[in-house]
Amino acid sequence: MENAQLIGLSRQIGLQRQMDVVANNMANINTTGFKAENILFEEYVMPVARDRDFPRLDQPLSYVQDWATMHDLSGGAMVQTGSELDIALNGPGFFAVQTPAGERFTKAGSFQLSANGTLVDLNGNPVLGNGGPIQFGPEETNILIGSDGSVSSSAGAKGSLRLVEFDNPQDLQREGSNLFAGGTPMAATQTRAMQGFIEKSNVSGIAEMAEMIRVQRAYESAANLSAKQDELRRTAIQRLGDTNA
Image (cartoon, rainbow, N blue to C red; front, side):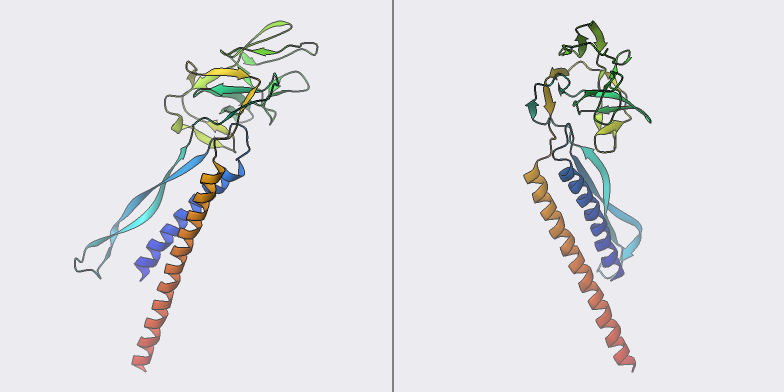
């Protein structure tokens, strides 16, 4: 009975982790540039434990293990805003921003100007150009962003946005809800900037809600099985007690 309960518990732990991922996706359904996550599971065969209740006495025990979390980097819907500081990326590239923890990468292109004229994201992190943060003077107007990331204004050329791509973007590690760290960035060659647009979250509300219901039902099923195992144990103990009495 202990083996059955432990296997069921491993399943419940995996489902709880899956529910956390689904809930995070749902919470960011309206977050600009957010990329959904999916969790992968694998069978973990206990190397020592065996179940000896089967005809073949060395029956191995299989548990559930959450193996990895995958980034869904498919594109979200492009929405035109008309704002000169809204930039969407058409392709696999990322913006580079400077955070207190170092350089990070994001798909969220809703930018603004700080009090000192620095181009920053919504969290106040400077958006990096190829030569560092991009700065504008107080009198500059007509900010233009080219498809290659080049930046200009009424004062002339201001540099170029640092757009990066990755050979294996699954190596990236999510930080917070909308930043990524790690990987080996390289200059973008397949990505084009679109000024006046933002990329919406790629989370499908209908699909995530259906997944949430499925996970909830699977968790309830595993919990019911565990409760039945407890009841079998209590019944067995009671019968053994009655026999000894």
